[in-house]
Amino acid sequence: MPVFNKEAPAVNVPQHVAIIMDGNGRWAKKRGLPRTAGHREGAKTLRRIIRDLDSFGVKYATFYCFSTENWSRSEEEVSSLMKLLEENLDDLVNYKDENIKLRFIGGRERLSENLIKKMENGERNSLGHTGMTVTLAINYGGRDEIVRAAKKAASLAKQGIIDPESIDEQSFGDMIAADGVPDVDLMIRTGGELRLSNFLIWENSYAELYFTDTLWCDFSKKDLEAALNEFSRRSRRFGDAK
Ligand code: IPE
Ligand code: IPE
Ligand code: MG
Figure (cartoon, rainbow, N blue to C red):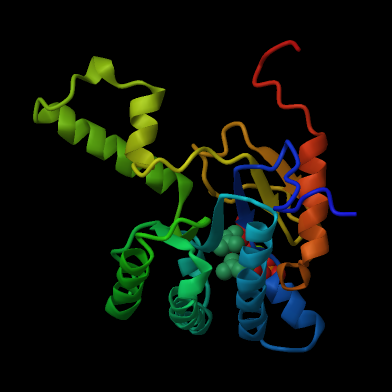
């Protein structure tokens, strides 16, 4: 009997789930396929899991698609990852009836014009959507994001628009995520590695962390449900002594 479903929401459904989708290369290798075949399969998992998260009543989901460090991979792998992103954005944007609000984080300066255009279209076309907010992290680095916010704050202070003394966690956090997306409640990493790999350094500050050996391509609704159930059993004290 699933604990989580929209009809009977459990008390502890995380509002914001972030996922490090790792293990595509190993999934392909196990099958004697090129790494790019793993990424193709991983993109299918992404589309599946977006729906599953929605069905469990999760309101915000953030997916790590391409890190600032991933540029160090072979040109072939990088270009196939970029191509896959473009293809899948088309599909995501075309799911109009799904009511998903699309949003992107990460620097756009190294991305192709075509991809940027699709990202902008996706954001624009889904602006009025009221369903789950899906954030795709592309050319994203947690430290890079914090540095960008620091630059913004410094520039506003230099122009006399803000008083440096007025900067606090709330206002600085708003410079990182200006559109009111809350901090991460549950951070899932597939593929067995036990690290953050520069993902959502600020937003994961008090997230519950969940690691699974399951490779992203194999990650199923059942696996997601196991993570959500584990989350509901955690006691989030936020430093309190309760
Ligand atoms: C995650 O899978 C996808 C991206 C990083 C883009 P990997 O490609 O890192 O797969 P492994 O970790 O090599 O198996
Ligand atoms: C993290 O996975 C990045 C994405 C899933 C996009 P990596 O495979 O790049 O991370 P490391 O190299 O194991 O830290
Ligand atoms: Mg990896």
